[in-house]
Length: 430
Image (cartoon, rainbow, N blue to C red; front, side, top):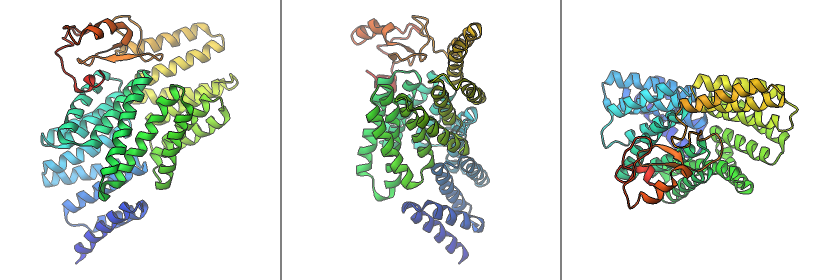
């Protein structure tokens, strides 16, 4: 009788969650969990709690639930459960910016899953996001290539949306804004199409991806000068997130709104947006996004050249966080901002050293174009990825690109044939 009641509580929690009564659902599952004797029911309930924690921005709770899941999977000696638990562990660690752990757990999820299992595609996506955090772009492209193939084979549109979003993130990091916008638009169009055909059971998750892709459109639109379009996207995403209590999207919307206000020279409003976002993101232990928000705040404080001391202090925190994450691209951008501060203070030798450190970091993450020997991603530019997944300035390989469709050409870096090598994700650019 007691276990039937427990199962009923779990089902009631699922109904509440579908009705967007998230806190009540979490309370139902949390109350039912200690009474459970069936380990498989316990595992699935922890999965519900993990997903709810992720959606609510409770990243440390997400990690705790995933750890409890893996203990159950080991106790039952069930590889299917192991794969699911390791995927949750990898996602939780990626969100907490523990990228090496995230990659390791993703590999275990792949190891314990079936070849045809979509878990492999989602684990590869986590690896791709983790490698962005570690600035290993060849590995990012390798993982996305495999994940995109799996998404097409399994007709998993949600997986494909995430692949396209991550490719947009890659081009944002490399400062090729038109390509970033193209990928984010494709992701949003697919999310809208998927939402039309989603059943009632998948309505919430489909709406979530519409909201996320709408938000991700805002940044490349802003960087390309369409402030009105960017504002419309982020306000729509914010309305949807606020109505559902989606704190991760709310916080990232605040960062985008800060960026837009900074672009319009509304510096006082921008500072308030960034400060509110930083508080929320730090509460969620989202180090990656909070560092981006801190960099935006630093740029805003430097605009009138009257808050350099405060900007320097925030920049030091951002650099420390970027270093703790192992993100050398963010570190380089911190040093470039520091060069700007030092130059304005007429500390020219220190400014030169800051710039040299930034250049060294670009070399360490292999973001130097093999042809022109200049950094990629330091300034806005057009970037091209070849089918061997090596990256160049588009202008540097324009001649090769024009001839590769009818005449065998070799990558200037690895010497592989561009005509015959195959990359699912790179080919989507042509």
